Length: 412
Image (cartoon, rainbow, N blue to C red; front, side):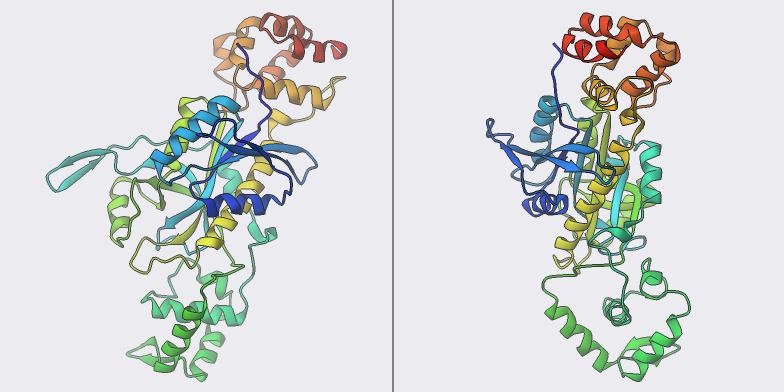
C-alpha cells in the first residue's frame, strides 16, 4: 500500500545540545510535537528557504549518543515518515593536520573505522564505505559559509590569541590548516612584530617561543573563555568521516585511521549508522554535517562544543536549502502543469517511482540511467520528452493513487 508523507528531511541529532542548535538555527517559533509513540517522538516545522520555497523538517534525537542509540529511532522514523533526505548534524573530532576547531565536515564517505579483523596485535581494516552523491560533494566544496551567523572574520586581536594558543599547545602556527584565516597575505611579519614588541613571544634558537609573559597572558585568556567562541572564520570541507562506538582520547588515533583511509578528516560515533539506514531503507539522499569540537587528543574539552553544534546546524540547513529546494526533483513544471502539482506528485513518488515506471513501461536500461535520488523527476522528464504525460493519470489510478491522478487530470 502506498503511504503518504509530507516530510522532506528527517534530521537526527545525537544529543540535546545539538538538537537545540537545530531549532535555533532554523529560526522557527512553531514546532509541532508528535509523541504518540514514546519510543520515537519527533517535531515537525515548515522551514522557509531563501528561494521562497518551503521544506517540511522533522527533528528527533535518541536518549543516548552512538550508533546503537541512533539506529532504532532513525530507522523507525525513516520507515514512518519516508523523508527525501535523512540527515544529521552535531559535533565530531577533527584531524589536527587538516582541520581546526569550529570547521564543519561533510561526511563523504562515511564508514565504521573498527570493522575488520583483529589478529594478535594487528588489525586488518575492512570497512563498508558509503559514498556521498558527487553533486552534493561539489555543493559542499563550493559552499561559502561567510553569510552564516556563526561565521566571522578574525580581527588582529583574535589572530594574536590564536597564534599564542598554537604555541601554548605545542603546535606550529606556520603549518596549521587555519593559518591563512587568521593571518591573511602580507600580515604575518607585522603581526608577529607586534607580539614580540608586547613581550609575548621571543626568538630562541632560530625559532619563536612563548615568553613567560606570553604564557601567562594566554593562560588567563583560555581560563576566562568558558563559553567558547560566538563566531569563527571556519571552513566547510567534505571528506572521510569514520565512526566508532567509543569516545576517543588518543592523539595516535589519526595515524591508526590513515592506515585504512587516506585523508581522513573526522571521527564521530553515528555517521556510518545514518548512512547505513539511508542505504538499507532506500532513502533518496543522506547528509551528515558535523562541526569539529576537538582533535581527540589530551587537550580535549568542551570549549568549542556549542559553537561546533551551532555552525554544523547552520551549514546543514543551508545545504538542504540549496540541494533539496533547488534540486532537479523540485524544478518548475513545463507546459500547463503548475509547479506545485508537479512538485507534489514527484515528492509523493520518491519511494514508489519504480512501480510507476513499470506501469508506464519504462525499460530497465532507461531507469538505470536515472540520477540517484532524483528518479521521480527523471521519470517525469522521460515521459515529457516522449509526449506521454497524459499517460500519468491512468497509471497513477492503477498504482492506487487516484488522489494524484485527480490532481493531474485538469492539466494534461
